[in-house]
Image (tube, rainbow, N blue to C red):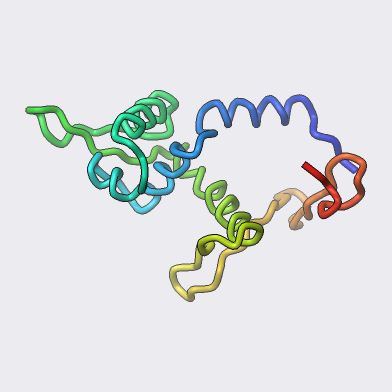
Length: 148
């Protein structure tokens, strides 16, 4: 049974500091299909207040997850797009959506655009060329037995 190392915990803490709130991930998800303007994002992320959207766009831009490109000069208006770093969050968002679908019974997970099959998110070891199964946490012995 593998314990979570301090470096893994601190790496997760760093990631959560940058994108670990509900609205940030929903904004990133809305941008996975391509660049959008503020109004389009406000529509694509139901329930987000304009001031919260403004704050998340600024934070994500400062964090290097998004890039803001001006499309109008007077007044200055921006279009937002994911950076390469931001695009890497797609797998995280898919994993969370799959988890939500499985355990909360809400929504539908991502599907393959070509054939419509639900996508699966798996951990892969490129050295061993094997899918790595989830390991039990703590001393409970199985994932189902872990109480939070």
